[in-house]
Image (cartoon, rainbow, N blue to C red; front, top):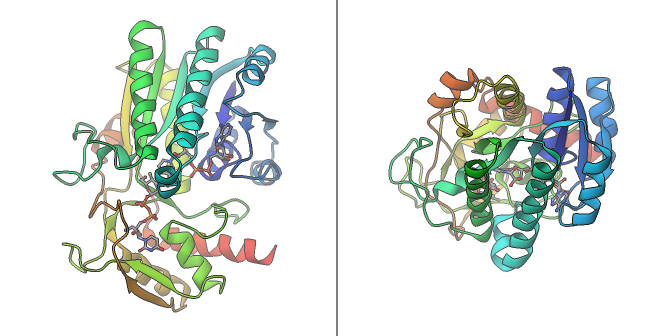
Length: 338
Ligand code: NAD
Ligand code: UFG
C-alpha cells in the first residue's frame, strides 16, 4: 500500500519512512529539500532495506503537485510533515511561513480531494497550547493565541482539517508533538540543523563536539524547581512509530471521529539543566555552559497528558531521556566524521 510522505527527507519524516517500510508499506516521498538532503533516501534504504521513491517537489508549486498526483493514483494516504519550523525565523519573516505552511497545505488538500485520497496524518505541535493554565496539557486544553507565526500555521493547519472533514468524506489524525529529539539507533539518520541550532539538544551535541564554544541556558529565574524551562522531550523513533499506528487506525476504519487529535509526548517534564545533566551522565563529557537571559517567546513549562494516545492509540513512548541523549550524541559523532 503506497503512502505519500511529504517532507520525508526531513528529521521526523525520514524516521517515519523507516518505520512505515519496516511495517510493510510502500513509501513515496516528496520534499523541496529546503531543509534536507536527497541522500537521506539512501540512508533510509540502508536502514530498512528498501529505497523509498522520491520526487523533488515544492508543495507551493500547484502544477508540479497536480502532475505528481496524476502520476501516482495509487496513493492511499498522506503523512504531512513538509513545513518550515523555526519559531524565531517565523517572527522575522511571517509571510514566508504563511505562504509555505498554509498555502502548501491548501494545495496538498486540494489535490487529495480531487484525487480521492481521503486520509491524512498531520504534524502539529504543542505550541498550539501556548502558555497553558494547567499541566499536564490534555487534548482538550484551550488553544491559546499563537505566540508566533509558526504556531499560527500549525493552528491553521488543524482548523483546515476540521473544516475540510465537515463537508467532505475526509479523515485526519492530528498529532501534537512535544519536543522531538534523539536519532535512529543506526546513527544513519538524525536531525541536521542548518547553521547555528535553535534547539537545545543539537546545541548541546555541537558544543560537546567542539563546533560551538559555549551553550547558553536561556534563563534560570523561571518559577520551576531549578529555575530553567521545562519541556516534554520525546524520542524521534517513538514519535515515528506513533505515525504508523495513527495511519493504521484510519486505514482500518477504527477512528471514532473524522478528525482526531492526540498529544505525543512522554508525559514527563524535564528542565534545561536536567537535559544537560543527562547528556553529561550518559556521555561522560562536560558541557561548557553559561546562564543567559530569557529567550523571547518561551513558555515556562509544558508537558503532555498522554492518556488519550496511550488508551486509544495503544501507543506509549518507550525511550527515556538518557537514550535520547545517547542516540543524539552517536548521530552528532557520525555527522562530525563525514
Ligand atoms: P524538517 O525541517 O527536518 O523536515 C521538514 C521537511 O519539509 C524538510 O525536509 C523540508 O525540506 C521540507 N519542506 C518544507 N517546506 C516544503 C515545501 N513547501 N514543499 C516541500 N517540502 C517542504 O523538520 P521536522 O523536525 O522533521 O518537522 C516535521 C514536521 O513536524 C513539521 O511540520 C514541523 O512543523 C512539525 N513539528 C516539528 C517539531 C520539532 O521540534 N522538530 C515539533 C513539533 C512539530
Ligand atoms: N534552550 C536553551 N539554550 C539553547 C536552546 C534552547 O536554554 O541554546 C532552551 C529553550 O529556551 C527552551 C528549551 O531549551 O527552554 C527547549 O528549547 P527548544 O528550542 O529545543 O524547543 P522549544 O520548546 O522552544 O520548541 C520546539 C521546536 C518547535 C516546536 C516546539 C513544540 O523548536 O518547532 O518544540 O513542539 F513547535
